[in-house]
Length: 214
Image (cartoon, rainbow, N blue to C red; front, side, top):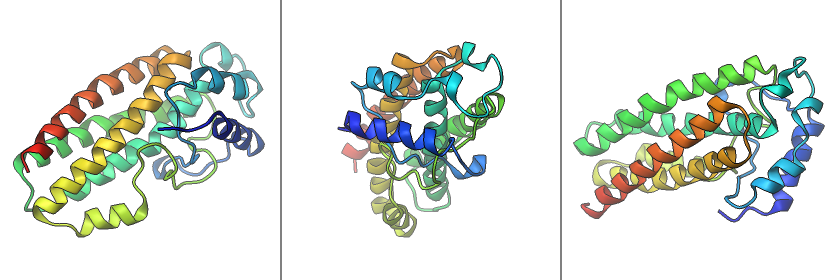
């Protein structure tokens, strides 16, 4: 993913100017701004400080920083799409058992993490989303056309498409998680970042192996 510092600055400016305006927790983020492996310093310098964020409860900046907020606000819709994609596969009756098992695992792991991150954002008294609810501009997100294609595909074609899409999706999540590990402050969020990197890198390896057999 090759997002420039300029895009990160735009994301920060948008978040600040809109007061991190958002919608409901279950519809996803949609900052539209991907994160970048090597830009943790830029993220921390360009983002408004947690103490200056609107609606921040007193003393909250001692618990977390803007990187933690961005991580949760972006990862919630990112996870939500992974859960959606897994549900699409699980609704099909002609999937290889290994693919069904993987979709079940992804859904079971990421749905509780959505609740966990939503709880953090609520506790920090900030919106659970950023500026819109599409999220498609974030790293690894699948666009509407790709989701429709996954829904209509069947058999081996659907299995391959799911694996290909989910590999890219996981790579995007790993990028964002590594940003949190580098720049985050809230211990539970940093730990979740490590957990995401470990779990999803392992699943990428598994998915690539499955694709090689199809």
